[in-house]
Length: 639
Image (cartoon, rainbow, N blue to C red):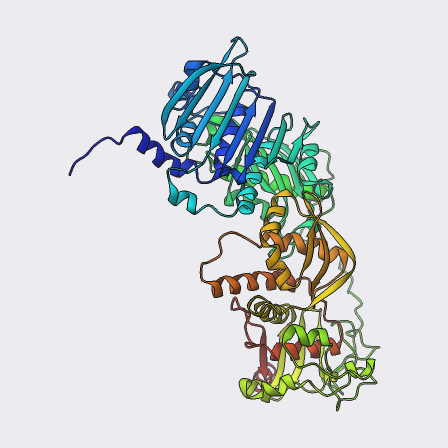
């Protein structure tokens, strides 16, 4: 075995594999260096999403000619000179790996000048080699131009995503810097087009508004607390603005962005019982603490940190958010200040002997039989509102069952029905699609539902209806998810779609990041039945959605951002698996925005649509849709 020291250029390329993963990584490192250099104005320009050119210009302190060459050497840094410095880091960069890694996989030109120097210098590096150094006239600060990223590592360049996806990552890194430094002038341009032009903001909240829009800042509340361990400040979203996606969630410590599933759990615990299951709020949370108590040196990309007293910080964050939500009437507040509060008297054991409790006068009917007559509570019964009971339609003729609109026939692949009058839409013979499926379902079709007068809708979530063997219970949302999944699969595979037009065009601000995802997958959304067009840098206009989804402007405004965030760049390679994954994601999200089931006719339609699916019992992700409570099981319950 021959052991040798790796050449510097190879070592730098290996380091680049950890530090420089894509163009966004280069922008992150260069912007952080600009902030560390004391700049108050930073400009970022990219061409072809950073493949061709990444240029970052700042008005910071600049470098001397010797420093301009030395900064590209591995482990060259101005931040660390002793072991003690390593445990007291407040700057972004400190390891000296970034510039060496960038220069190893690209062609870099640096123009820089210090305030005290009359002339500056230009340094050119490529493949870790210094190609030239010369004096030039240049403004104070630094101007980095990174060209042909991964030109000498074709495998890495090949695996870069599309320009839209790479630009989405670039914008993400730009936002993380902008959200920590509201006092900076920042610009981002792509192929000569301005993406962001940010002036110094008067406060952090104004910076968030400049970046993400007033709809975000209008739906957050302030948080703030100071302890001996950590000071916490920032903003958290109102519970009613919680979304299915995890967009706009940021943690910062001493001005540095970091990820932390552990601290995210503290946030979610504070929102317990306040947001629907599967939803999460936006948050912008800033920790300020002694740098000796936090380790930022555990990840090459510096996006993970380790706290010395993480459990204390967890509880402090939880209490801080809980208190803020309570003060804004969103939940129970945690009262930290008990001074001056009235004392609650402690009663002796004999108190009840001298102060007997009065009996509660609850009226009841001892002769009431819940199983008398038809089983439905009468209007006079105190239990009449126990369920969202839907009374039978007195005009309903059980011999004539519901038909469907032509649009639904198109969406679910059924044979069009004949509509001679509006009444026929609800009182015509069943469409032949159900008959064609009889043999496929065997016992399920033997347990076919009785006339719709027997259907009970519970809380808008479940459908109860008698079947031959007992009572069938259908989870409405999961049934809608299965129906939508199969409709979307048909749309993706066969380009069949059914679009319903919104009453008025709906403008939805989705943010600059998501606009790149929208541009990438606009064609896919059109295949699914969405009619969406761009309007400016961060807004889309929705004029149509797939059949069966709500066209209410408020529902559309909530659905579209979630839908676009569900699009990601990590699809599996096999086309059929990719389509199934996309259809499942869309079906889950869109089932939340399906038209509610309020009447027996709508419930009957839903059940028929479900029985037209290839799988009536489970969603694509394996969750049960329906269950039959048999006569024997019912007998055992009351045996």
